[in-house]
Length: 510
Image (cartoon, rainbow, N blue to C red; front, top):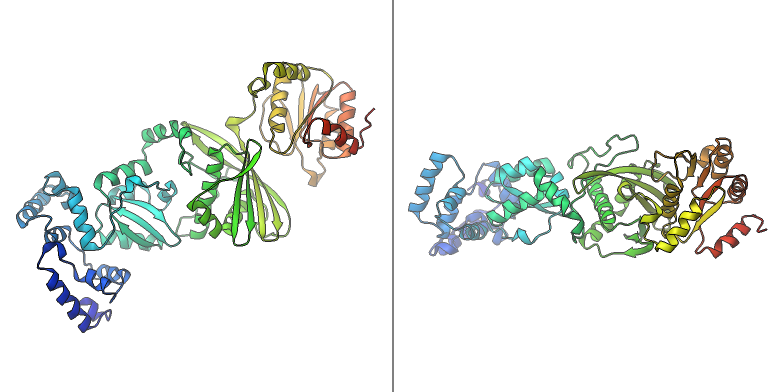
């Protein structure tokens, strides 16, 4: 006995399980293999049994299991084995094709004899990020589906759970513990099609994705890049397990935000956990993220580090506030769309907090007509934006749509023959019709300095992203008084507050 020779069990323990096996052999359904009995008696654990069987190339044969359990007769097994020699196919598939055994009967026998659970995987919502661990070709060739991932264990639904060689191979390459379950052949095939769709299936999936109510959308295929369009997410799961896990969590947070059409994501570090909130329609909201929240809590520091790597601030600096940005591609309804992410990192008592602003190119502002205002208000706004001189200030609290209204107004005001200059911090949406400039206060490119330069570039319209200080306010008023239309935003709760704010910035109300 190999387990005795290897020192895993004693001769007395072996005699005990042999006695139990003999007692159970009177009825086929009660028969159990020695390994199963040893695990049940806790003389060894499943991992030790698996190790010794792989080491000595011992495999539990499907035919023996079905025969022992009474699922098939010797005559049916002999017939199936003859057919297998002719066709070269899998024994289980031949048994099913020839109706020698039902799928349910075969699965029940396997689960009983191998002491593995049967799971109806058709009822599961499987995380698509698991395909990064097991690729399509490998899953297809071995008829297995990854269904869950915990900290160091991946669970596989296998069509042939007796295939110990595949399990050993996966453990070696992933450095994860492998937990085996089985399900019906039809459920495994259906799950494979959903988890690893071909191009036509993927397009069908994407076309219906917007109506999905699942917690984490699977319609988004991310390609995280830096601003030079150089891919930075290259390591395999084995090479960078912790980084990959954080990468998956970041992608799921971003996917959730995109699906909910959030304008901002707030990641707030607290004692041993992290609060994730999304600003939607101007309101900061906290959602029930289910199991995702637990993973976020466990890896919140890694998530912050991953976001900093993407945005390119100094990852080692945790004492100073930092800004950064990165770009991602998503596939929505068969079309590839760019999304820019602007990040701001600040240190706090429990750790770093991050705010991510989402800039979806497909949702870029168009004109005032598409903002949903009443026809009367739309007409008044158009009349304002068609003026040749003066200043238009758009006010409102955070997330109320100031920037969207600003961009829409600018597009409505544009006509061929006009020179439009913008100073933005940062440039959120790129327009070919305007000359856009980005503020960089580190090198002296402020809103006020841009206005001075703009006045020498012969513009009709000047757009200033925000009036923040007295110098910018003074320069904006001067530009408006010298034959230019100036459009900007002011951070106040309402339009009446703009007067108080401008007065506080030193603008003469007369």
